[in-house]
Length: 452
Image 1 (tube, rainbow, N blue to C red):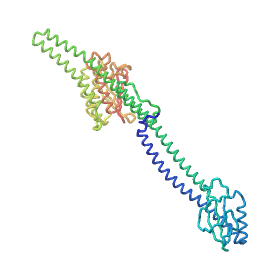
Image 2: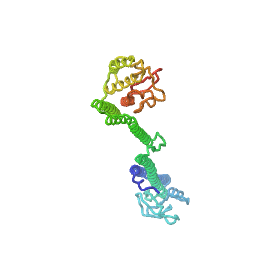
Image 3: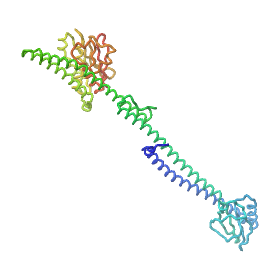
Image 4: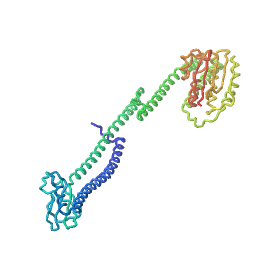
């Protein structure tokens, strides 16, 4: 049994509306066709009667009244004849024919079938004919049984009714089938949404054929759910990482304050403990500031305000700023920049992205490494590479290098909290920049390709 709400769906109402319009147009077309068919049949019927009258008139003109009588007798001699004739003299006496004598009628008229014909259904058989006065005053009436005309009219009308009824039935069945399909797809989407609301994030809308419009909607919804699932998983992971990475410095700060509370005796000892606590607090604030910046960049809608940025000048400026820092660490920072290369983007964010990459190279390259910042154009794409000859990152770790708070084992002893590359990835995604970590043999190569 069909659910009642199936008849209340928008698709069913639209189908009924379209079916109604189609039925109305079909009725108009059927009426026009019926009118044309009726006129054609009637004209053909009248033409047949006129032809019979002309044949008798022709015989009268050639041989006189006796020949006309003979023609009428010949035409009515066969029992299966469907044409009716009456030839009577000027006084009204019947001369020939299969109709009884009658008062002359000259207009087209309808007459009942004589009982002598033995028709089983005389009400369906009507003689339609015309009368004409011959030159000698005699009267000729010629008619034909209109049963075939009536049958043709009824068959035509029945065909139109059958076609219209079939159209309505098919339209309603099609509407029900379409509504049922739409209802099932809608229920599937509703079930998935309810499952997601119940925290079952593994549920997805079934997809049968990705090329269909309804399945394209399902694919879009599933893509959105995949993105939401990834964000929720990322949120849970970030919460876990924050708890794990910040618990240690908070614990150390608390222990030092407790130790100072118990053991400190002089003003200098208290001052030293407070300075250490302030330093720990500043470090924690820097972490939270980086997290806030990362969230702001990921949720940023600043793409509409992008402008033209001289990338060559920006990288040259950063190289000049960080070259003394690299020298202090025993590294050598070099550049290979194509001049006058411009890109669209946010200058401040791009500067932060490349500054993070250069800082990471200086911090984690080990000792006496060679650092290179290169800018070039290949295959109509702008490419920047930040390379070092340090320890690098193993291929297995490169997949996790952009995760928040992730740090390679070799870098855990150095300062930092594993947010630098996460900021780089967020800024790159905002600018639709492709960032790839490659082997520099030895060291790490960060390959950055701007969109064309």
